[in-house]
Image 1 (tube, one colour):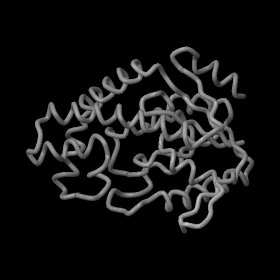
Image 2 (tube, rainbow, N blue to C red; image 1 turned 180 degrees about the vertical axis):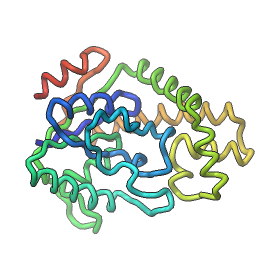
Image 3 (cartoon, rainbow, N blue to C red; image 1 turned 120 degrees about the vertical axis):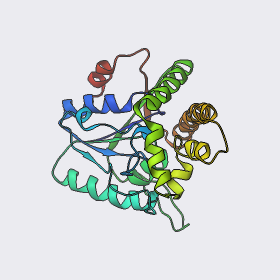
Image 4 (spheres, rainbow, N blue to C red; image 1 turned 180 degrees about the horizontal axis):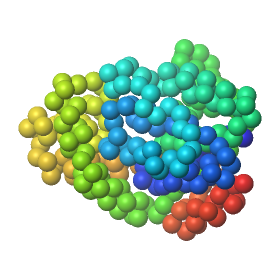
Length: 235
């Protein structure tokens, strides 16, 4: 069986995916457009090895920020992994907040401009995690502060000093703001404030995309329902 866990940044998708994977003996496929990059860690809240708790993860750290990796390449790579796991009768959990990647993976999504009916290609269930909006924004703000404490500035400085100026670092929240700071365009405090603001705005856009593009999401408010209760409901 295939399960997809979606929701805005900071809602708790990673923690929930590990809980569900342990119960289902499942493997996880990343569906976050930034966690595929080896060089991005702190700013994308990438799962640490110890946090995986032995669960096999796919499509994390598989390309470089210098690579031209698009939703098309993700579709090819993710379907290859998914088809392989399903052929072995494995349970699979797809986790991430990049709705377009998920749509391209699970539906008949084409890139040739032709008629696309978006029919389902797999049997799957989509679980959406949400929180009360004000609480989510507080969590996002606190998470940015934690990223700063964990060394986000040094991580981005390493990329900047290496002369890396790819599309990824110029568009990824948490990286483009520090690039502007390093260039002297804004202050450090302004960079941090922008990261928080843009992360909150990104969460809004994620809600909009998932609600508009997917009609079959079962939403759970994790401020009101415990994660283990959601697991028990799903299984």
